[in-house]
Amino acid sequence: MAEFNQHKPIYLQIADTVCDKILSGEYLPGERIPSVRELGASLGVNPNTIMRTYEYLQTLEIIFNSRGIGYSASIDAREKIVSAQKKIFLEEELPNLLKRLKLLGIEPEEIISRLK
Image (cartoon, rainbow, N blue to C red; front, side, top):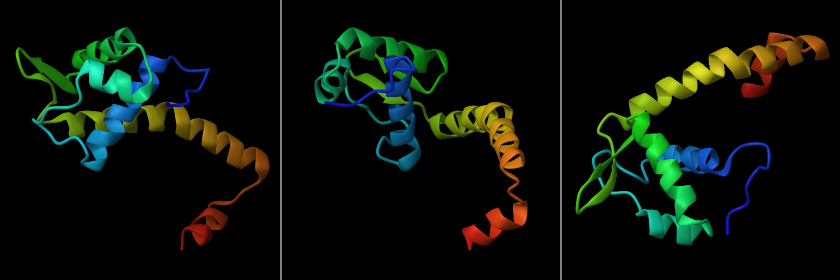
C-alpha cells in the first residue's frame, strides 16, 4: 500500500507517479498502462480515485483511452510532462529555492562545488 502526502490530493500524487513512470521509460509511449482496477489494487486505492487520476491525465493529453484496449501513454506524453514540469519548476519551485538560498546566504559557487 502506498503512502501519500496529506497536503496534496491523492489523485494528483498518483498522476505524478504515472508521469514519473512515463519519464523513466517504465510506461512507453503508445503502449498500454495498468487498468484502473490494476493500478488501484497495486496502490491500495479506490478505483474511483484512479479514474479521477486518469481523467485528469487525459485532459492533459498525457494518456488516452482506446475502447476495448484500455489506457495508453500518448506518443508525445514525455514531451508534455517535461514541458509542464519545467513550467512548474521555473514559476513556482525555483523562486522559492532562490529565496531560501538568499535567506541562508548560500552563494552559487557553493552549490556548484557540491555538484562536482
